[in-house]
Image 1 (tube, rainbow, N blue to C red):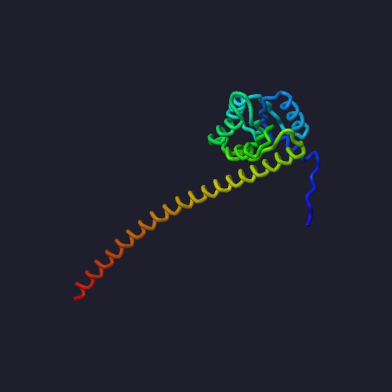
Image 2: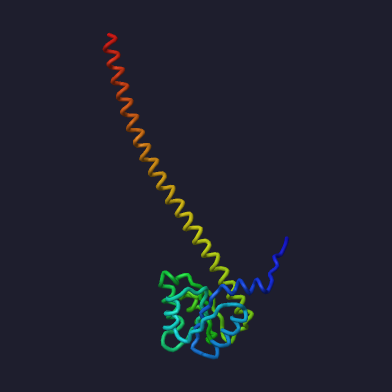
Length: 195
């Protein structure tokens, strides 16, 4: 079995195409996370509140959101509920980040629709691994949706073809019935004439 090799440059290019919205009310956290993600090749947009995050998400597409759970104003959980309730962002990958380390907080975030949950302070290598796993899963889901859409289109095309074939069959049956009736009528006339 051959293990594929990845060059750091190819890995950097692959990530550079991915955009991450980081939402945290701490400017220090935003700057550190943004710098570390940028060094890994991600395109990063920083945001310090939930309302602005929703505006940014409504205006452009992101590949992933790192969302602080507790923020003044609109909390991370409220932002997450909004995202999951909107068709355009219902499947957007979201990793909840928080300083709250109790299991109830993690459970609540996951129940609200977070794809993953990580406690602050976190190991950046663990965060990067979770980001990659979440993005990989989102890519598989997107590919599955494309396949389902293509299959739905093929089924719709076949249904149209089937409808057209049924119409042609009905016309052919009607023509056949008329021909059978004409032949029977001719046979009856031939029989009368031959008597």
